[in-house]
View 1 (cartoon, one colour):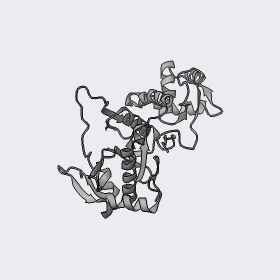
View 2 (cartoon, helix red, strand yellow; view 1 turned 180 degrees about the vertical axis):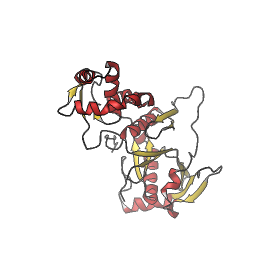
View 3 (tube, one colour; view 1 turned 90 degrees about the vertical axis):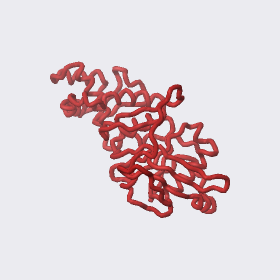
View 4 (cartoon, rainbow, N blue to C red; view 1 turned 45 degrees about the horizontal axis):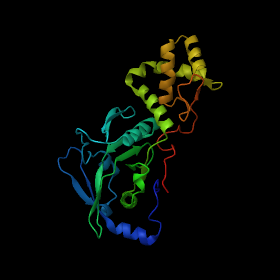
Length: 282
């Protein structure tokens, strides 16, 4: 079993690991279609991951006047449904998860972890439980770069990672992405709308146009138009193909320049959730 470590490792020594293990308490989750939550000792697992992936959120997002966070609902095209988020960073995470193309399920605020400490009991609700194709589920905490360095957050992440070892889950701490990457991905995400599915019939033609070599965006559009595609539809076809990872474009530079290169997607994964470099504060 492997565990994704995207935060400072505070459990490197056996003594520290043993102390963290001793702090593990219960895992509280809401079974599907249940009115009440169920709590089981973390050390009594592993439980079938499907029980957690099919559970309901342990809490609902709060909406109130004047709140500093920006909660909302993000429509994930890959899942065909809305997923809640409680901050702009969580929305960024969902957008990358949607773009990655490997996600088969997302549960927001999936459960509450209870930890026993000498000073006081400690509880933590991770942000997302994510299911991937042909991979073990991933527990994700979303925290800004500065906030993740605070002592209490570092302790929480270490305890959560220890719990994930017991639960046979991978663990990731996601922080804010590169601004250019995020701006460009947000633009492409607009083409996830089902209304753009009508241009999907032109995607094979676009692949044929790019078969010999990458082309600047404007040239790729001109060749689509020469093949009988309307000019407005041609541009939408390129951006829709980029969102669906049929073609790839540079997401760390000016995406809307006419000379931006468009090429057929390579066999290796496109930059996305799992292979996009997550910032480590280590």
